[in-house]
Image 1: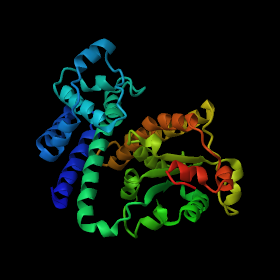
Image 2: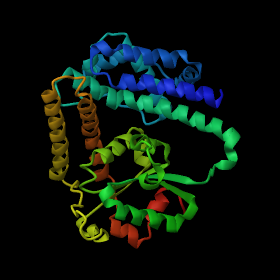
Image 3: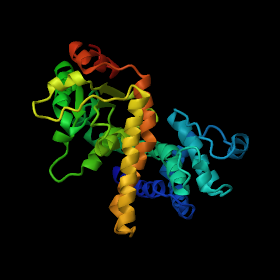
Amino acid sequence: MTKKELRKISLQFRTLSSQMLKIDSEEEKGCIASFYNFITETPFIHNYLIECHKQDYNFEDCFEQHGFGRKIILPSDQEELIDLEYQLLKYILDGKRALFTYGMHYTSSRKYADMINAFMRKTIEPFVVALRSYLELSIIDAEEVSNRSDNNPDQVTAFLSYCQKDSEIADLIDNGLKAVLHDSLQISRDIRDVPYHASFKQFMQTIQEHDFVIILISDRYLKSRNCMFEVTEAVKDVKYQSRLLFVVLQEEDKKHLSAGVDNTIAADLYSTEGQTKYMVYWKGREAELQQQIDQIGDPIAAINQIKEKKNVQRILLDLPDFLEFINDNKGLSLEEHIKENYHSMCRFMGFEV
């Protein structure tokens, strides 16, 4: 399979998967069928699906045993995930149950559209991401045949995610890691890796192509739409927890910021009250967008507001899991990282320091 052929397949895959993941009604189930037919009828993808097949799943027995709307536990192994989800799509297309019933326990909303959207986001999207990763890695392998001399196979890549108002602290971490690891680590940042007139959104979507993601969490980070978009991109990977490094900023860290900069910096996420504050913030943003949509009245004229509302709903779906991960995993403060010369970060990424 040539590089050009793989890219054509990847383009069709992204188009059909994007359409499928946006559905929110039973009438749009045809988008699932189009995607399913494409991956089944494309030999390169279907051969991989066959390789992943290890067992047959009886979803009818599963739903009879657990009832409507129970969450499906996704395997952490990529091939097991692909095997299960491919069979799940076939089961969904058999039409034995209404589409909204699959998402009854994925959202507190009782609207059918929200249930379907939540189910697609939390259950089907990991399957799309896993297959997309397989395609992208295949393209990289094809490129390496002719461009091997241009690559540095020993270099580790990291995506640094932060709020622009915290850029001085991002500089501190960026420069600190470079001083220790030199050319062994390549850190991607918007300030140097997004050319003039290039898309910030496309850059943020490259987050999954990196070996690691370093997140600098402040109060304003957790209230930033772009920053939280990066979080939702990071957690698409079912193995994101093994790739994610984080620093939770505290009030004392504002000493690293220039005078006159807005110094609301500490992230309040180690208490239920603090976590609730951020959930309420995004629920409020969702309500504001819905009010704007209602005021405009015409869905076509309000298309930007509708798209933004869906982005906010994605944040609301992923934020609880992200906050739970941060609370459940030991982190170090910024001052501790500086004091130890970022050695914990380096060792987490596999370097001997």
